[in-house]
Amino acid sequence: MSRHWWAFWYAVVFLTRIPAPYLKRTDDQVAATSLLYYPLVGLLIGGCLLMLTLGTLFYNGEANLLLLAAILVTASTLLTGALHLDGLADSADAWVGGLGDRERTLAIMKDPQSGPLGVAAVVLALLLQTAALYALLDKASSTYVKNWDWLLLCGGLLLVPMLARASAIGLLATTPYVRANGLASALVAGASYRRVLLIGGVLSLLCAALLPAQALFIIALWITITAAARQMMMTRIGGCTGDTIGATIAAQEALLLAAIAL
Image 1 (cartoon, helix red, strand yellow):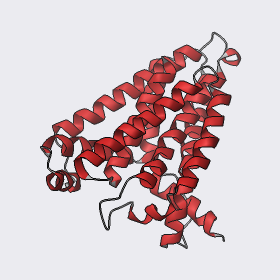
Image 2 (cartoon, rainbow, N blue to C red):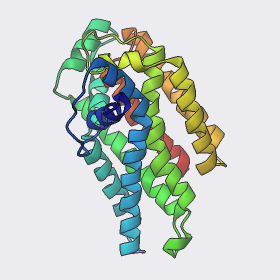
Image 3 (cartoon, rainbow, N blue to C red):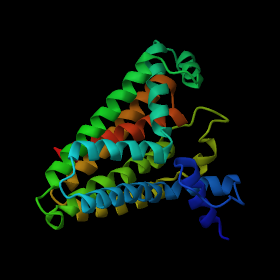
């Protein structure tokens, strides 16, 4: 099997709880290449959510949309094992509890326990994501299932997870990784400006196809959130960690969904 085959499954295993074949290669080369497949894993997650939405609506075309939104957020959390939410909780605790000190901030991020600020950040992110999904479903809905705005729905459910995970590539390519043996340290070699431009170009075309009226705004917002997160990381700890990247992904998913729904 080729390096890219195992790299794809490495990304699936790392980012999700989706069943995958036994990884016969987990070396640094495979790990670095796996970064290229992060948007594809996002597409896989979004595809599962879209299938769940389709199944629910064909089972009951008048299903309660708020309940469906809550089911989708629950499914997304289960599919990812709350990986990015964990990063969000750790980062929120560290940013406030670190009191502006780099070493204290990094130490708090390593603590497996979550404080009240971390819990609050996760609750707010999930609340915003649920409300955004409800608004998106309501905006795309129709009396008849076949008349739903499926292009808009695909833009929200498929494109957002891809954009959010692609931001990890941009952060690792432009920001120093501050932990020598951190969870994402093996990925750094796979982040390059060429890959950032290639993946950014492909996702921009997909955005233009799925969300023609909002494409420029969504791409601009995606870049702005990533840049703002990077600036916060550089100011506080001089680089990024796996937790701060996860926090950025969680923030991207909630904020981009809200922007599309609005």
